[in-house]
Length: 429
Image (cartoon, rainbow, N blue to C red; front, side, top):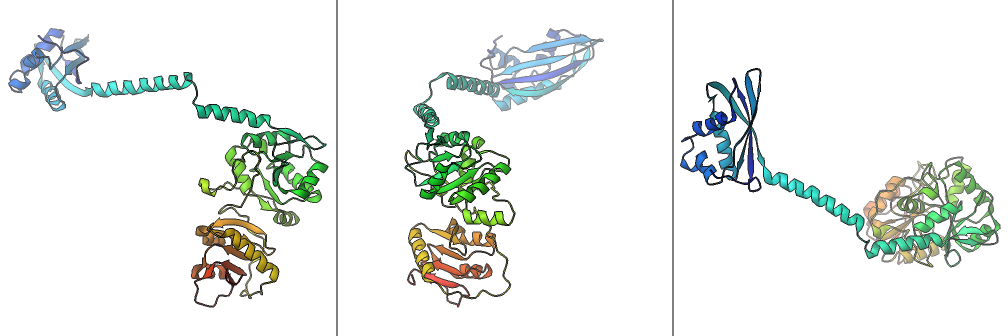
């Protein structure tokens, strides 16, 4: 009789058999062929299928215990799935083998191709892992590795106190003041080259002189020591912005994303002083929601460039101030306010952005105009003015009135009523 190779079999029928007596393997195989003969017609006759090689050698494994036989029957098949299922169902009709009662039950039909496919996938994973571990890195990985090493080697000594600093401190208009050498090294790893460390608890004279000439952001650890350094720096140096690492973390251990989030969350020194005077927390840094690359205002600084910051969307401290119960009285615009509004509006032309200002015309933050309404709602009262690149419409006026905003400065006016806020357009400026 013919026999198909296990390699060419597409399906394998697995069946369990229980026999109330002791029989041999030939008895079981004879019963399978004998009792299914003529049952399925000539096309699915087991003997003919095996002779043509479409059914393989039937294997029987029987174990005899306590006068009863139990075992497994395995039938390889190269038929299609429907024909294989019919053959599998046919062998379940066997009720006697020799003189003994028997019960045969098909457990499952195994698709050999699925098993082979799983084997192929697992082996492919092993081969790919070995390839990635042993092959040379691509050009981008080599470039990044070299650039990383160069950045770390670029740390310098600055001033007569030999303070640890990045290479771009002198040529940058803005600098970042941190606590120690490890903080400068970590910022260099992320491409920020305009950082300098005070290297202790006392503020060096070199830092004081730098603060007079450059725009300074003080970046300290998120602990009590960071708060003390902020108080000391604000007492002796002209700092512009203040920010802290997340609570319980140090600048030297921050990842790239955390560094940029902290820098974008910086606040004006006036607000820091106000919070210190009220005895509250100086800064409470909270993680931001992810932003697209277009809205990231802190980027890795190319050689010679400084880190510039414009407060991102949705990242503000609530301005201090008590809610007002009486309706807002319209204030008269002064010449200095008119000049300041004009400069800010010119800066925003074409950016589709908005500045949110306090009563001293300090910029609390900058947001896209699409998020202006949400930002005003979240901040509540305490906003003095909003300058934005867009049209002043009904929705904005109503929210501004509820938030007690004094001035709305935009490109044009698309509101027909009489607002209770001062509305200033580009034409007025």
